[in-house]
Image (cartoon, rainbow, N blue to C red):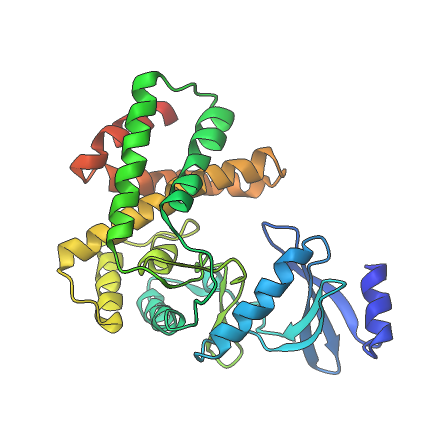
Length: 313
């Protein structure tokens, strides 16, 4: 905090009051700067300097297609500090309820459609190797290190074949759109003007059309009725102008969900075991529920669902 104070002093912001705003799952920290009724957010990426150029670049790409991202007021790439427009403290997770979730999700889906028009030139691809790399986190961190399971040869074969099939269906979809990768209720804000504010987009890739839709509608932090989420998924399909039958699109949506949630089981376990962030343990049951419910519905993933259910009990 002393370094931040010295930097603020040096750029003429020394009179602004600093308070902690939040920390995220990485090593970035956020502070709120206040003075005479005005406020801004200071993002401290000094421990993750490499994440700053992508943040600035993705901010520009999204802003260019009218996605509401925080304006950058001051930046110091060398020290790792940004002063950003303050969207306030209201995340989707704070306000979603049975009365408003459909309206709020429609607004967020409209943002996805805009995001997918952003420039993807030079972005890393969500290719087969990366899809499988992410899903492999489940075996190492969730099954082996968190549950203490050692898979038999048969179980390893079931897992390997299932992950390949999931990747097949993900790659069957239209590819190459801008993918936020964490477009969920903790990263979507309602600004003071009631706009959808988008944050935490620095890890963007180019990938499948359903990725951000799954992050939003099959959120690891809050659950809504599956038939309602399917209806909203089809709303996205129509807004995006995709000509594909309902059942086929929903299979794309479901298999993208399997890829993401299998990965997230590994990530939540790793955050607990490696990084000491135990708060994510409470989100494992819902994530596991999504995987089991979805995998049990499709013939090509049923053996995996049975195996995972046995291992997790």
